[in-house]
Image (cartoon, rainbow, N blue to C red; front, top):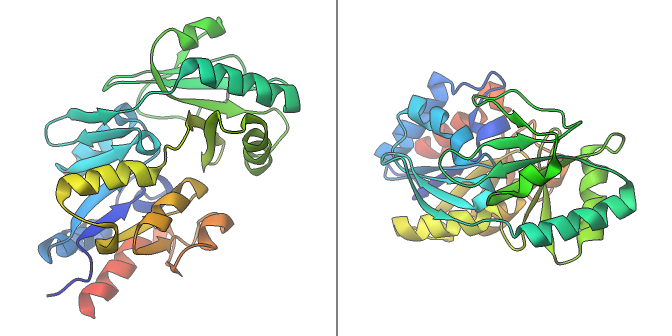
Length: 267
């Protein structure tokens, strides 16, 4: 059995995970078959390690994972952080003040760095349910008291696309701004992306961009698609990602990853 790629890079939410946050048996088998044909699987997610680890453990995943939009390279088998890049809190604070000067007050949350980094949530921020409890803080200064890998922003009126566009225009070259999912707009270190984290992990595996197929669903996957040889958008993907993808598969709930891998394994 031949397979044209040495690396299969998959986003988690809206891509590898179904909407109920499980991975189908069909997709598990397709990834296993690709591995049998010589292709490593690497998870590349916007989630920080503490919000990713339980999913990897459930999958029996023991390889490398790229987490926190590329800020963290994590060895799942050893439960160990190999690399971790933090956000300059002074720059982030300046960037946020520039955004608020344009669009008005924002609701904030922040992801602390490290294997057990908490998500701190400020007043008014709408929290999505997850495996780890968020820590609510009334004093915004608490949010900045320890190293962070990202800051989340929400606006009471602007939708995700409008907030992302306005924030990017306001921050200039201080930080990067990405939309990572519904209700999830993030402030990141300048130059950080899933592509930078994936390239680091791939180098450790001895694999090149030309050997990689990538699957995703949101605009934060665009750099990963630009880096990989072949980018596959899910049917449920954001229009901006579909516009740069080489192909579109079925949705995350309809085994979109497996559909493509099974076809490649047959060819």
